[in-house]
Image (cartoon, rainbow over all chains, first blue to last red; front, side, top):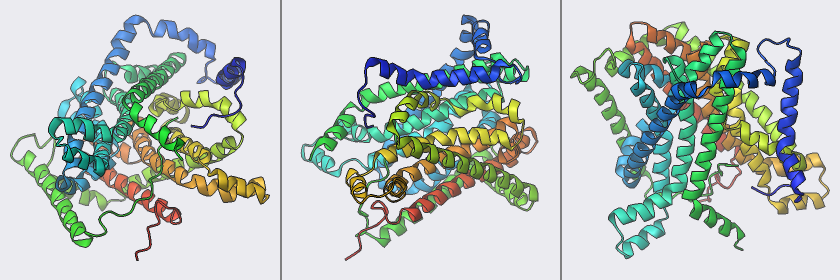
Length: 265
Length: 277
C-alpha cells in the first residue's frame, strides 16, 4: 500500500491513529448521554459492566472453550484442506472428477450446516468442531487446488532435471509455490470459523461466548450485552492480527519477491 | 491492508488441445456428480448411518420436488434473494461512494486507517443481539448483518483500486485539463473498476452467508427460517432439500456475479483474449 501524505512528526502520527476513534467514542457518548435510548448505554456504563461480567472464572468457562473449539476446527480444516487440495491439484483427472461437486459444496452457505450436523452429532463439542471443519475446509481446499495448479511450470522442469522428487519436491516446490494461495484460503476460512463458532453456540449450547451474549440480550442486560459484542469484536481483531503476523513469516519470500519485482525496470 | 489483485491476463493454455479435452473433463465431472449421488443414496440404504440422520438422496429429491410445487418455498427463496440483493446494493453503494471520496483526499484518508483496520475484522455475527433488539425478526436484522459484512469486502477493494491508477494516464488527463469530475469519470473509475468488481464478487458470497445466517439464527423470513422450522419438524429430508436449495442459490450467485463481471470488463486485458490469428 502506498504511503499516504507527507512524513509528519510523531505527534501527527499519533493524532492520525487516535483522532477518529476518539471522535467516534465522543459521538457515542453524546448520543447516549441523554439516556433516551434504552439500547444504547453510555460508553462509561459499558466499561463499568466489563469488570463484573468478565471475571477470570467466566472467561475460563465461556471464552476459553469457544476459542479452543474455533482453533481445533480451523486446524483440522486447514490440514484436511491442504492435504486434499495438494492431491487434487496434482492430478488433472482427479480434479476433473471432483470439480463440480466441490464447487457445489462450497456454494452452500456454511451456517445451514449447523442444523444438519446437529442431526448427526447432537449438540456437544463434536458438533461444534465438526461444523467449523465443514464450513472452513472449502476455501482452503479450493485455494490450495488453484495454488498447486498455478505452480511455475519452469520450476517443475528444473525439479525434474535435478531429479528432485518425493517429499523434497512437495515441500520445496508444490507447497512453497502454492503458499500465497493457501494463506488466502486460510484467511477466508478464519473469518468463517469465527462466524460458525458464534452461530453454533447461539443455536445450541449452554456455554460459550455466543451463548452468553444471547443470554444477555434475552435478559435485556444491555450494557453486559455490549461488553460481549465488544469482546467478540476484540477476539476477531486479535485473531486477524495474529494471522497477519503468521502470514508475514510464512510468505516473507513472496512479499520480498513482489517488492523486488515492482522495483525492477 | 490485504487486497485481492484482479486476475492477470492469461493466454488460454488449452487452446491447442481444445475441444476433446474439454469434452472429456465435462464427462468426468458428470461422472463425479453421479458417484457422489450414488454414495449419498447407498450410505443410508446399507445402514452406515441412520436414514433419520441422512435420508437417501432419492427421498430428498422427492421432497424437493414436492416443495417446488408450493408457493411458500418460492416465497422463502424470494425473501432471501431480496435481503441479499438489497443488502449487497446498499453495501456497494456506500463502499464505492465513501471509498472514492476518501481515496481522492489522501490526507483525510490517513486519519481513517486505524478505525477501518479495527472495524473490519469484527465478525458481523457479533451484531446479531443488537439486530434482534433494534429490528426484531424483520428484514432490518438481515440487512444490518449483510450490509456490515459486505461493506468491508468492497470498501477495501475500492481503496486498493483507486490507489492502483496508472500515473501516466492520470498526468495525461491533468495536462489536458480534465476537470476533477472528468478525471474521476474517465481515469479513476475505469482503472478501479476491476478491483471494485472483485470486491462485489467477494461481497456477494459473504452477503448470502449472512442473509441465511440472519434467517437461521434470528428468524428473519426466508430460506434460513424455513430450515430452522424444518429442523424441529419430523422430516429430515426437508432439511436436506432446503440445504440443497441454498447450495443451488449459492452456485447461481457465483455464476451470475462472474458473468456480470466479465461483461462489465469486456474491455479489460484480463477478459479480452488475443484475437486468434
